[in-house]
Length: 187
Image (tube, rainbow, N blue to C red; front, side, top):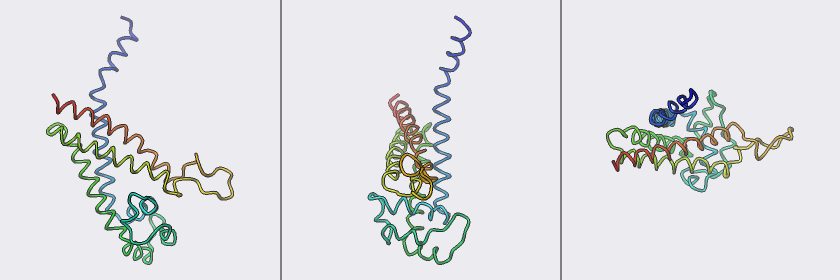
């Protein structure tokens, strides 16, 4: 065997470590993002996504696009917008979503002890990632708006769109951890 083959064998043996790192990364991200759903700025930032979604828009009191008049830039404080978001159900929904996201993260984390629970947690993350990715279709703010620059619309993702598209990675990671946990349960 040559040196290159030995290197490839060593790299191929990292698959189990890679799945563990992937699972740990999912848990960290889910706990962190779920926890942030209790911060008002985070709750306010998801309003365009939820409001425009046919799957979730009903959670809010005011229909889309009413939120555009009450958008607050991260770090700013606008008492009028805060009052509107409270009436809209923004914070209540975000808190509930945060609890769900944290529970999914904890379910994935118990893989060494309860792989069947981790399998279900990863399946729930697959569904959550698909829901999040649907925002690319339903949320106008996911794309660069048509203003003075000719670079706008599809395929030009805005900051919101760039945040959402990353869920493709979450989706793939969830499928890998789901399969790995199911195999562990079956063993």
